[in-house]
Image 1 (cartoon, rainbow, N blue to C red):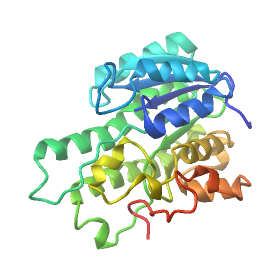
Image 2: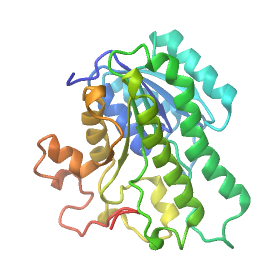
Image 3: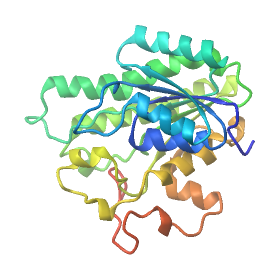
Image 4: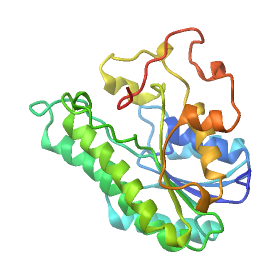
Length: 273
């Protein structure tokens, strides 16, 4: 299947950034998009709400269902899944994109930040997958995609932000484990991560380590996710994938259009040597 027409995607954190880019790429095929995110009221510091995202998705050719969801809350997730199924008849794809970031060491990480990262990144992804599972089992080509990195146990990826690293690797381990557990159901579970830093609102959390001109646009992750999600689920699962490598497999040779400022040096993302 080379397209996502009429397929239903449940995307967490899809009101902006990479999640919205993945949603809009699927919308170009005529997909149904469930926007499961917290932003229902405009914030001057953060662009986008579930409603502005819905407008962009429908303008791109898809159908949108904006739902205010906190992935830490089990009842909210279950209610959102029920509404998605009522509206679109099922769920074919889950994209666990919602993520919290706090790049600080032990003394600089309040426990509320530690809890937030683990509740959103690890527990939220696990919970959403669990809630969507009965419906994914009914899909003809079910996929779960985690926005999580390959696990790299080099100490440099822990020493400055152990709590964040633990939470992201928790997502990675969930992807790896669930791929094995759900293989019998024919449900693909993969992790996708950018080769370079992506220009999103999360840049502000990197403390000036990356500038937009040294980044790529979210569309590279959207195109990579589209390729993954259109592959036969039984043939691609349990993989830690990088956007650039995925697109090379898809035949892309020129990555210049993805650069925010073509010609500028691109910075590798966290967890990649």
